[in-house]
Length: 464
Image (cartoon, rainbow, N blue to C red):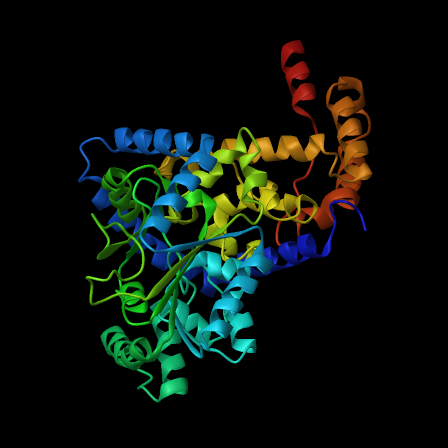
């Protein structure tokens, strides 16, 4: 197998070609993204100086990434003081092992889970279900995907690729609702469906939006209240989070929560913002008896070691870069092959968080238009980071020898006017067609050489 052409790359090319011409899928994505975009633009008007807010957020996250070890230790110490338990996990297997230990020790049979990208990253749902544990996704989008054995399509809206009609038909088949059910009727059914699930669950699993080093707190921002219910009734609360989610102080939420809401859904603030500081205390009547925070590395330190690209870890998962990306809006979320992450942020981070050989192609799956950089609330220079990735891929020599030979020949050809003028336009078109027709794609018309080059036309004009 060559260094570049592998199964993952081939699947990406095949899926991209298919999705790019699936007009029904593209219409669903664009219809939903347009709604978000309109809300976001209106919400941004509430800021008197949003650029200043973004700069402050970028400075804060840069400081955290440069001293990540210090803030993580501070968080751990403060969280343990409140009775919480911290588990450090190097990879997916470590997380799975620890969660299975918790469930087996406590004889767990029912789990409710709020929207958590990192739990999808490690595939915890499948593992728990194989071990005889009943698990329910309580976020509406994730629940819809669970019913269809589907994966998240978007960082913020997991079921972005499904229309209202698709969802109505799904609930008609699964639960007997009318195929013409309104959104309100479906949501009312879901609320009623989960009411007993929350009460009966032994464990609630969540991700988190921010970890607060100063107070040892976990902050979860949501719109449905399902995360709050997933942590209120079960006697055990397990938080799975990446090590990069740290903020220095509680006051920093004043900056980050509005930025997240504004750029994710176009709200001034999400509906529910909950801060957890540990399990139920002696003088408290509500809350879990035990609370665990699992801090996952999973090659994040590999990305952290990259001087330029480490800023990708500052991402707060608002989805703004996906909503603005012309590539994402055409090929969708599943095509990237690094679910649940997709879009420009995945194109930057995935090669470092996975195998560079397998996922280097994502750094080239970009128009480099820079829109993702413009909309990022943390001012992550995403299109520049893609270029740094490309540089590193070349420096690591992760390319085919034929590519190197082609670039060498192309460079010498373009620097030599006599070589460029060799042969007539018919011969050139024949060579072009034989060489590039397949790579150019069956859906596009290959350009043709004109009968006279610009050089010849210019020469003739000067001699007239």
